[in-house]
Amino acid sequence: MPEPAATDPFEQAKTLFFDGLACFGARRFADAEQHFLASLALVPGRLTTLVNLAATRLALSRPQEALAAADQVLAVEPENRDAWIHRASALGDLGRHEEALAGFEKLLALDGALGEGWLRHGQTLQSLNRHDEALVSYERALAIDPKLARAWSNLGGILREARRLDEAAHAYEQAIAHGGNAELNGYYLASIRGRNTPTTAPKRYVQPLFDEYAGEFDEHLVQVLHYRAHKVLVGHLQGLNVRRFRSALDLGCGTGLCGPLVKPLAERLAGVDLSDRMLDKARALGLYERLVHADITDYLNTTDERFDLVLAADVFIYIGDLAPVFAAVHRVMESAGVFCFSAELTSSESHDFELLPSLRYAQSERYVRELAARHGFEVARLLREPVREDQRQSIDGMFVYLTRR
Image (cartoon, rainbow, N blue to C red; front, side, top):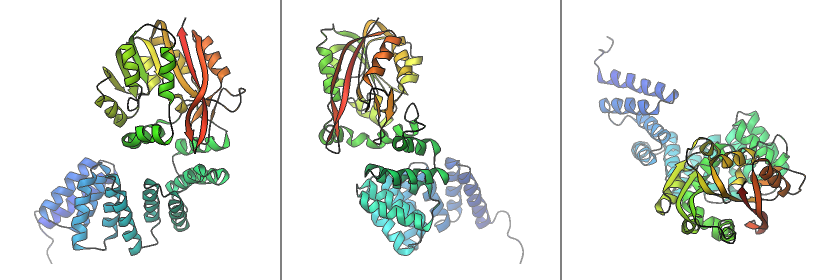
């Protein structure tokens, strides 16, 4: 039989398909999508191409389009395992977690020996706050494939929150041993072991956490955790009998909880935060003249702006070593300016800072006073009051007000 001509549409489609696979493997997802679409234009409805198109659109963070591609496959081949995993993943990305769970359960009914399927099933249960069931799913995933680092890490998180700390530490150690992110899992492990503590939380932990949390942040923080640090911090600021501020900076501004409280005290209000989605919420308030997506220390060290009020409500729970922040705040602060913040308290004054099993940092009063003196600040006021609740337990904190010498 003669070889097909180079212009044969099927052969062209096959070449485009394999080119798409190569692009996907190289993480060139936009190029992969174009190759798959070109292949489908020549041979419409080819299932393997549609499956890979769904995976590519998930990688491009376009879950609605990924869902459409997966549904095309399932309309023809209802038991296609890859299509089910992509469909359920797309539904999860769209926040349709109950539907995603049903999708993963269909996948596992087709093949209960898929470790990755049980991992995704557990992640979906966690999104639904069904943590005990998620733990079982992770254990099943690891029984099938003990090398699933993400399952070890997620299992560790559930065990840590359940205060089963030795088991959680073992899970994080296994995650690292099997190629899981060493920085993230090392951070989690340090919160339990109290050794090799990083000086600050990894950006890869903080930014995704708050991007995902943005939609329900205010309600959960204030109503569930009874968070009040923002009100206490600004309330005592008013008690300092200071003048109206010319320019205020809200460090780690999040959704802008401090904005309505600070704006009446300042002519201009700026905010900086690592989370784009949090900043979108703050922007909608219409209170901030300027909002910046950046690490707070990086911003303080590079900005040309100057401020006579810098405040940080519940921000230093993600930073252990505050020395770089103090130095950077001093750099941007006008003379006679005020730097105020909240912080959780260490278990002992002998510690400068410590990373707690809650994954939050705490600082000692002694440490804060020493930093203030070292970086050109005077302590105008330091109060000890609870900042929030955690599992119905009040969390001790301090509210610190410094003036620039």
